[in-house]
Image 1: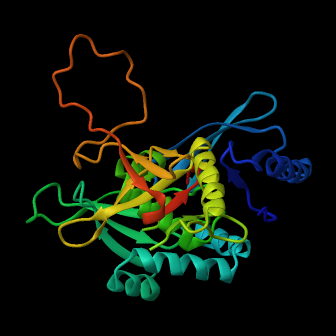
Image 2: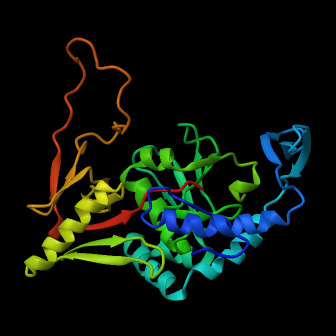
Image 3: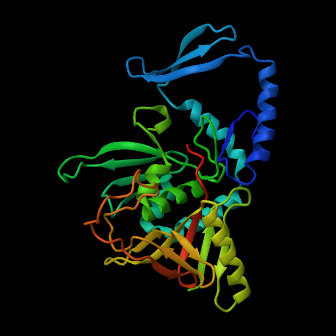
Length: 209
Length: 123
């Protein structure tokens, strides 16, 4: 569902992707016409560990390159965008997803999820422990094969089937459906889960830690 | 137990397909939809049994036999090996000395539950 002010990234082979893309594209162009930076393009961007921010290099229409810093200390912007995207979901859909999740989890895991919005599960295949979270990337933790060592975070895995809203943790499907997709893909094909997910380092705001 | 497929979806939310053997028309319709979903890149995650602790085991269906309404699952013999979707850069030379690939296993759709996940847009 397109939401004003939010950019929907759709999987290109989704049957309605083209129609939705046209609608969203039209809105973006309307916004750009009045924009101050019309004709500017992002030439490059990377994360600076020293400054803890994203460095952006932009090119003006006359070919001049300018760089700037985009702070990346916290994730309040993503939190607020996610809040805005919640208009896309209905309580009925979320309730149905919770019922399905309830059939897939143990009583204790489900209690954790309802009370805290997250639950733990250890992969039988790899031994990696996953923290599945509602509206946040899944955290993958491991002790490096030594049970006496404390766990460390490998990365945070972000994945949304069909579509997601850029700059937020919101997917096109209701939050618990995204959690089910993560959980079942990890259980059935862990390799594919990692392959299909965006792997955010724990220190980045996108990781949601 | 009647086999079901829960399809994670946008809009109205999850939809369910049923494989009730007493309703052959419905089974035929569901089988056609599942086959089409696999062709479109959906991932079907199937409960294939229980482990020694009684906890359910899940696998990804590689294909679906529309005529017999069975999921086809590859690589169930080994838990540690994981088959990749990507094709190798070049075919292996000479005779392979490694372990033979496990034969695909068929799981009747009427006897198991599944979750279907659409292609991912990233995150």
